[in-house]
Amino acid sequence: MSDAAYDDAALSKAHLITPDWPAPPGVQALFTTRNGGVSVGAYASLNLGLHTDDDILAVAENQRRLAQHLPAAPRWLNQVHGHHAVAAHEIDAPPRADASFTDQPDVVCAVLIADCMPVLLCTDDGTVVAAVHCGWRGLAGGVIDSTLVAMNVDPKRVIAWLGPAIGPKAFEVGADVRAAFLALDPANDLEFAVSTDVPDKWFADLFALGRRQLARAGVGHVYGGGVCTVSDPQRFFSYRRERVTGRMAAMVWRTG
Image 1 (cartoon, one colour):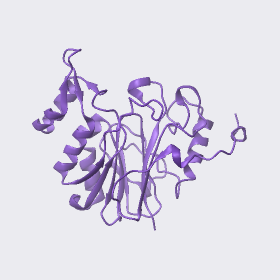
Image 2 (cartoon, helix red, strand yellow; image 1 turned 60 degrees about the horizontal axis):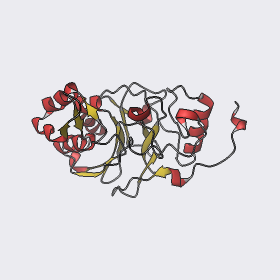
Image 3 (spheres, helix red, strand yellow; image 1 turned 90 degrees about the vertical axis):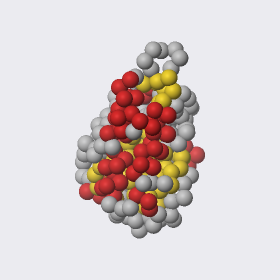
Image 4 (cartoon, rainbow, N blue to C red; image 1 turned 90 degrees about the horizontal axis):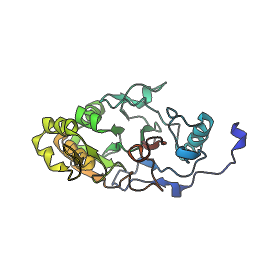
């Protein structure tokens, strides 16, 4: 199928989520939903992930539609559930990393999401922004701390927004996940609820674990969280719910 086969429909603002956080005027951010694109089947409709088995022309059209709302194309990452953060303004091809930051105007930091928690960061004066992909491995592995170090700012000056992710009633995990977080801080045990149905399983609150990690790092201004991707199939892709699914994007940039 050629690009010409798609109509020229625009991606509506109604298909996008604007983070509700007190970012300074020079900081802009968006989170996509699954709606407003051209992909079909399991990827319907605004799948932005080229690493899926979706039609690459459909993904390219979805990315073109998204670009109409951005100052420049997003600096995509090859996400590996790690803790490496890179400078978005230095990206030519997607690097193996799970976070990016920039102090340059109109450079779009972006992470792809389908249940993992996106964390957007900015300084209170809008001079540095960052996007972080927080699966449980990355979160336990220190991706937030690595990003704050890379931003090279006082964490007390950082504002954070937690985007839609798998919620605490859906995120059932094993003993290895719980042990990884307890090794970081025994108080993390408060964010695990034992499963009454399956032995040696717990329900983890990824949002609360993220807030705790931000607080330990010195970030006291945290917003968002609590919107579950698994429980809302009309708006969100979810790997836990569907396995074969698309990807949404969380993006942040600073203006000139």
